[in-house]
Length: 416
Image (cartoon, rainbow, N blue to C red; front, side, top):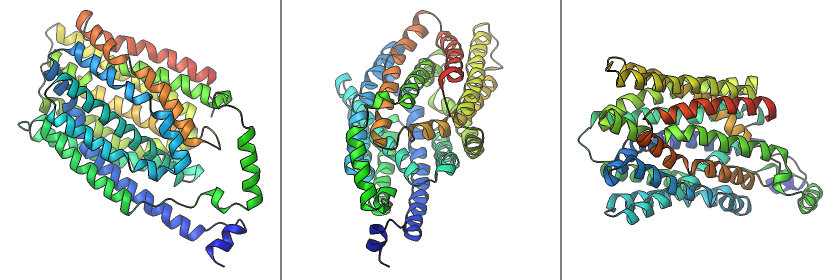
């Protein structure tokens, strides 16, 4: 029986589809490995680069907040385009935009050019990231999404270890060198996407014509997205979460440079522990998410986050009182617990965002990310203001308190 006959009769094309999905997942794991390496170098040097460029933590935070505009304005549109034209077709635009933004940053000599580079870079990043995550869901079974995301992010954080270590071992390289290095990696990713990744046959492709017609009629009658309680709860929670965490994380590396006078190499020597811990715990966290459910896993993540913020507050207090011996050990312990908070969060986050409804999945994903990015937008400016006008540890105190609000919301409103 031919493929066309199977499709017309509603029979699954199991062998071919499973082969394509497996090849896609293997390719995505490799892509995330090299992407983690490039982004690992970029993340270490980017905020110190902004601080050196502007000469101020506050202005660094303002630029980060301004760049966040590009993280939320296009997201629903990108999701809608992915639903209409296909995930891969839209995804193909991500790496080129990503690379263009990095090239603009490389040549930036004034604040307006710098901001343009950041905006283009962010636009490419969200186009790439959103469609990448949706494609993982497309190629994963419903009962194995947690472990599949665990494997994909295991590769990402493994690559990030290499990227942070690369910066640590090469302290004399400029930030611009790492921008170009990351650009080359993005070109390789685009080639893999264009030449190897294939769109698998979806369930709708293998359904009988009558069933597809019924689904089309259902789409005409379906309610607006925000009448879906899943989307309401996910929107509120993820916007709150990114706001709480973003107040501390948006200027974290720049704060290490400004408050503790760390070099890029010293920042990398701290951050690498985050990536190592991420890689080690990512796959177990994915299994845990599949086993205990999204809600419990997200709550556990917030408790680990409390340890991260507590360690940074403690280190800051000891440092300001002249006790410096605990500086590196305390920051490293904080990074380890931060990593565990992330690994217990990511599988549940992606399992939630890629399952907000049977139709318009990409658009639903984009809308939630839209409002999440609205929550992120003011965090850089708030963090910079608090660090410069109150105290360096003030953003961590605010974030620590915010985690209690998150846990309360999860317990009361979030459903598995």
